[in-house]
Length: 237
Image (cartoon, rainbow, N blue to C red; front, side, top):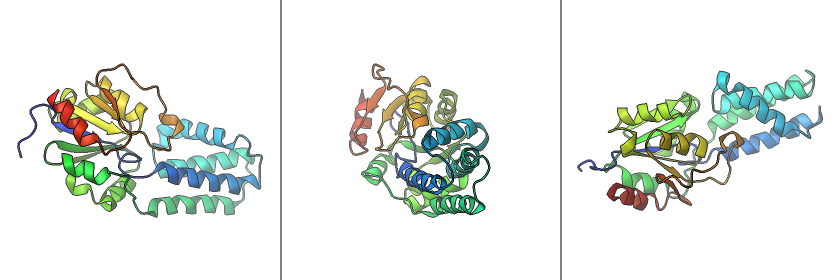
């Protein structure tokens, strides 16, 4: 099938756009609070863990491994170094369990990707641990539908400009689909592309941002179901 003369490339975020992810972090964080509560005051534990995650992003990056290290660091801090080794071991085990859980697609993910494959270049653009993201993509059954996979350390306008130039005709002829305003939508629009926000029920606090509601290249969908129709409209606009 001939490539579209309008849009050439559709970028997809992975975690909480195509498959569930954040809810696993929420469940593990609840277990973390339960483990630490026997050894320290946990009234501000969530805030302290979030602060550690923010502080460590530059060193550990995004994903399960950085999250586990931040939990361990926070456990040491809130217990003044008295956290038992058994608790550390349980946190490590929780991280291994997160890395082993099966990938569960979000509603309409397969149908939306299948509907767009072949008509556009599809690129998975995701942050996180390389091995974990490769595992989840393989388990999702969507891997063969993507023309390229870009696992990046961060998502900035320069990232999208580079990715969409490499896999198409530039950001101006590309659209990025994702659940994060901060990472998927706003920088893609800043690079010159379309930003399509598909919110997930669980949102990580560090990805929060104000929607660019007035921008002509911003769109919001309730889920991935209407995406092929929206892309068709954009392409013909």
